[in-house]
Amino acid sequence: MLMLADDEQGVLDVTAEILEWHGYKVITARDGAQALSLFEQHADDIKVVITDILMPFMDDVELCRELRKRNATLPIIVPSGMGHERFVTDLRELRVPVFLKKLFAAEDLLRSLHAALPPEESAAVG
Image (tube, rainbow, N blue to C red; front, side, top):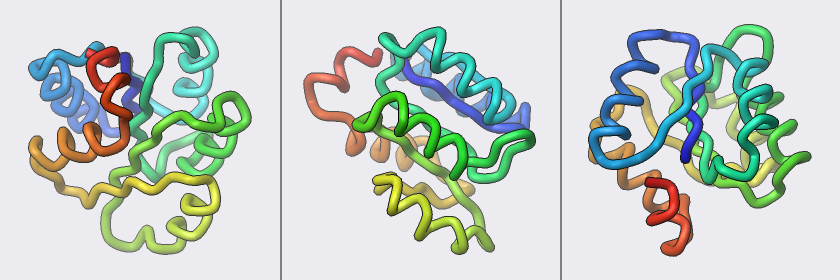
């Protein structure tokens, strides 16, 4: 299972649909606080988190920091648009190596997801 967090409902719906179409089980969150709550409920099942960089209540850096406290090795993918360079240093310090440029194609998302997961986990997410 993977968790997708984005405050834009359209982006959330389309991205979840793409991932589900490719066999992934997806849970969604509209903001960082909801994402953290869902992670705590499903920590054993969530194998990767894809989170927007700017969200209400808890931004991506704060969410990643909290997720790292709960699971130091959890793969996290961060799609980001122009102007978010100020977050890159903080995210790299939190061992978030996968950045995906918005607006991304489905193939780019799937390639990033595949790269973030160890081969044995890739099959388990779907």
